[in-house]
Image (cartoon, rainbow, N blue to C red; front, side):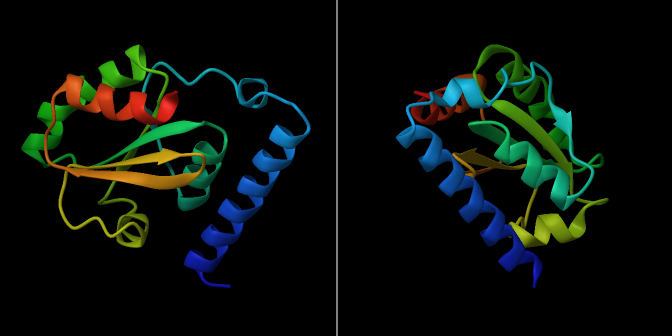
Amino acid sequence: MSDSEELADIRRRKREELERRLQDGESESSESPEAPSTPQHIESANHLDEFVASNRVVLVDFYADWCGPCKMLEPTVERVARETPAAVAKVDIDSLQGLASQYQVRGVPTLLLFSGGAPVERVVGVRDYGTLASLVSEYAA
């Protein structure tokens, strides 16, 4: 099974689990703990899959240590983690090139927003806190 097929299978199973829980009357908040208040550094593709599956809304920051705009965006990403309901993940594109390629990251910073386990928005470049918080709030409600 290829990585993309495996990822699609994980998403399908997670979506089915969420639908089953909703049909059984469980609230989504009972299934997942509160999102971490600091950005979490991702170590592998599986780690990202687990992180996305265990949080309702996830903002993934694909960055590089050598990238000036990424450094400018870092305080904003930290604030999003602290002040919004989104969990924030950071993916170093140099150490996880395959993961960056899988999500078609062509430039940094690239931010992907996941909701319910699936990518729903892509933002390339530096954005202010208000823009990112507004984007998160669309999917966190």
